[in-house]
Each structure stands twice: as structure tokens, then as C-alpha cells.
Length: 258
Image (cartoon, rainbow, N blue to C red; front, side, top):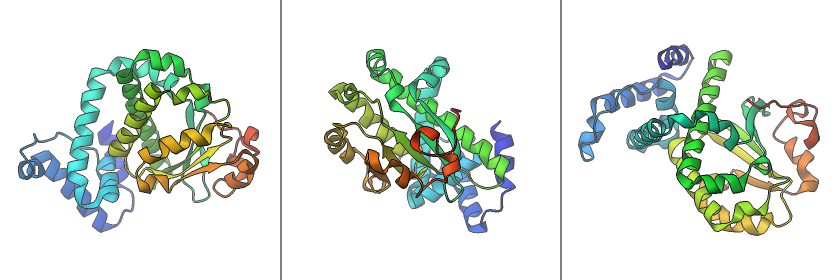
């Protein structure tokens, strides 16, 4: 599957300078050249083109070491938790649907639908594994859109509908897992977020957000906007066309969960 995906990406009209950087990165990782210079990390196997291209654009000079760490982390978690694939659909109540005003994908999330108590009882390692598998599923969906549309589709906007979110998610043990997930997503999937809108927040959310916000790096914090309930429709239209906004948020569309 990765070879088919690579061929599709290589047919895209990407700048020659980017292609050279990506191919050099892939060659260095396969040969272990970068690992030898930084302490002898073992050579990596096949690295798919689209992942390498994303890391080149996201991390500049540190792309080799970043991608090496990401690949090893993914390999370790997936090999140890392959049996969790069926549980992933229950972890994130989300789905890609529609496009933003610049033509990129939009991810819609409703964390208020989650059983936070149940996931707390399941244990931190299982939740983190579900998050990684969920993000990999999302990356595969972006690869599919890339092939269908004939252009790179690796970044997306996010609308998080907070209505119905229980404040039990803010318990210390849940916040500890959330902090770990934030670090994991930033390390393994850099520069995928274009913007994030937190809409219809519960009354006490502002106090919780003040605790959570410092866990995001400054670049990510600048992309996140907490939207007062009364401004939901107006702000959404600044990012997404009405036909792609679900009806319950004041739009004309009805995004389907993917």
C-alpha cells in the first residue's frame, strides 16, 4: 500500500527543491547516515514519501532526527497494540468532512460524546495507543484525498464542538494523559494543524483551558481559538463555507463521520 501511495505522491507537481530534500532525507534514513553522526542509531527501513515530505516542510534542519524518532515510536506502539484497531473508533468522536475556505480538509470533533470515565478506567497506555492509531488512520485518509485531488492534502483545520463535555475530563489523571497526547501528536505529526476552533464551550471551560493551554507549544497556541457560544456561526463562516458547516452549528451541511 505504501508503494502505491508513494507513486501517487511522486506524480504530483511538487517543487524540485522539495523533491531533492525529501529524497536525500529518505536516503540518509535508510543508510543510517544521520544516526551514525548522532550516536549510532540503527538504519531505518522503508520510509514512505509523503511522511518524509511532511517532515521536511515541518521541521527543516531537524527533519532526519525527528522523523527517525517518530518512526521508531510508531513502530513500537503499533506492534504492541495492533489488537486495538477495533477500539479506535470509540476513542475520538471525529470525522473529516468538507473543506475550509482555502480548500483544505476540516476535521470535526465532539469530545462530549466520549465516555471519559470509561477511558480513564482503561489506563493511560491504552488511551495513548488509541490516539496514535487514530492519528495514523487520519493520515491514511489524507493520503487518499491527496491521490483523489492530485495535490498534497496533509494539513487540516479542526472544529471541536465542546457542548456536552463533562468537566470530569479535567480530573488530574485525565489531564496527565491529555498532556502526553499533546506532546505525542506534536512530535509524530508536526505541522498538520492549520487552525483549531473550540466552539460552544461549557461555562467552566475557561478555567480549565487556562490550565491546559501552556502544554501546547507557542506555535500551536497561536492556532487555537476559543469561540464564545454566541459567536459560533459568525466565526465558523470565517473559516468554512456554510454548505460544509453542520446544521446544528448554523450551517447548511451535515458532515458524516469517517
